[in-house]
Length: 197
Image (cartoon, rainbow, N blue to C red):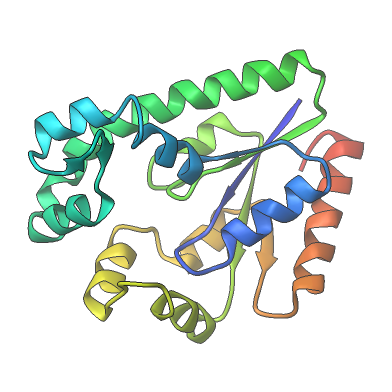
């Protein structure tokens, strides 16, 4: 089974691209979705213990957690120490299930793939990218996004240029969706027929 790591900086179109892999029948493990479910389950207790007031009604209050992290970015490692092992556990369950099911290819959608050295866990890496102007435009449309928040997020991500240099595949989402779909289809075809990048 080939494991493709999918990553890209904020606003590059990674989630849309991941859905295109899924539409072609490729199982996708979405780290953001996993975190979302953990924030309603296993991660709630440990996060409340470390970040008092960051949960409400038994779920993590993302806005409050984000506020605490913005005020004190030094707390990011404490959050990662709680969340990353839980995410890895879910990822391992996903891989075990699809390996047993005989899937030829799976995608691990990992936002901070290079930042967490996750490339060691995949067979190939696809980086989703677009023009910086398009990226900024997409990100600033998000609810609650500010220039400061955008700058903080970017400061914690490996620069796009560096990601592209390390990638086995680059998916450019600057153009039409059909162009992105075509790029995804070529990668799926390559990885399922040759069993390698």
